[in-house]
Length: 175
Image (cartoon, rainbow, N blue to C red; front, side, top):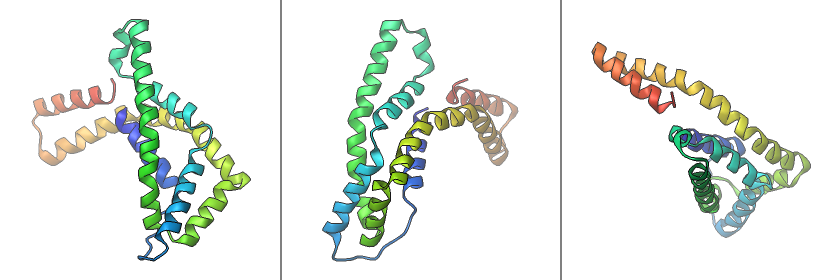
């Protein structure tokens, strides 16, 4: 599920920022300031709740065998680690956006995310995130099975290797 969470965050990042390469300019500090503002606007007030929901979905299968107290402690640690990670992740994003986008593009992004529609997009994206993660998680067994079959086809696995890979892929998918 960690891969799903990472993939979801990458998908959200790509969704919020269409790629466009920009040449080197002298307006770096202004771009960085706007990029920081853009990143802050992307976060929205609902981020904490959405991250908490996604973190809860990332619990390993071993959690089911834990006592309620142990599971609660595990969830608390996951929540704290996630909360600590998010500011660093967003801090790392701003220089990348500042490098990729022009000053005009960054201003347009900031203007959009400050608008009613932009704020609604942020809110609804975080509301959708747990549901999107569930949808992806539900597809994982099929995706992993397909991946295992294609790998075995490509590497000409024996029947035993195919069974072992199928078992490993099912375990990785949480089955």
